[in-house]
Length: 336
Image (cartoon, rainbow, N blue to C red; front, top):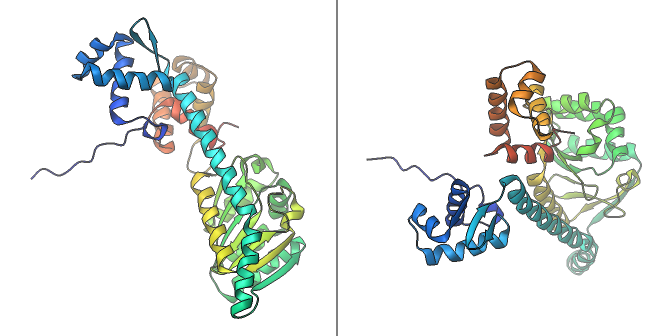
């Protein structure tokens, strides 16, 4: 009995194309210029059905139509446009999530009223100052190890304070099994002096660290029942991290945990994790429009080696094309 082999995923499905439209798009690329009848012959399809699909491809901007003929546009331009639209929609979704989170205070008041009615208020502790912030986390970890800590940090000053004043304490706690950390930081803070060494030590201790272009606000989740919320949601100043409330309310913890997981799914690993600088040099030169032969001459390697490094980059980035690899490498901060 022959084993079932699943079909590979359609790479353009995330951009709104159906498998049939992807197959038709590939046919247009191969023929470069063709009528509907010629495309129907090439794909063994019905001209009437293909006409509808071609209209959709023209509307999406991946194919041009001139005088009854369909012309292929360069994939970098056409698919890049669709990717940009998709990223805009994701950004809008993120803004809507931010709006929901800004309303959390209202929900807290409702929840507080319910708790008052049933059994009294839930605990809210005001914490002020960097030392008190870090000591509070370590204190919770000592009481209930290992403490799962999820944290989002939006500003450079807080990242710098961590690198120069508090990293060793958290690295030690992670090593000792007191903490189990996942942290999201802005990609632009990676140039902070001394940060790379501390983050590398933190990762070796078992922590997971990812980056985003923009982190919407400071917050943390400590264990199953405690959330750290800034006095002002959305602020990108260190004062918001060092003037916050520890809220022990399941509804707040659940909302922030869901938000963190959404950010984590979009975040990228640290740019120096699991990759070679030689691969990045190839991607940087390619992003400047340099051809394989010229890249090989500049790096002093063979063209075959250049193409092998492209293949390594595409495999690590989960990309099907060099263009996709460039987009993903940029998103992860490899090319900064």
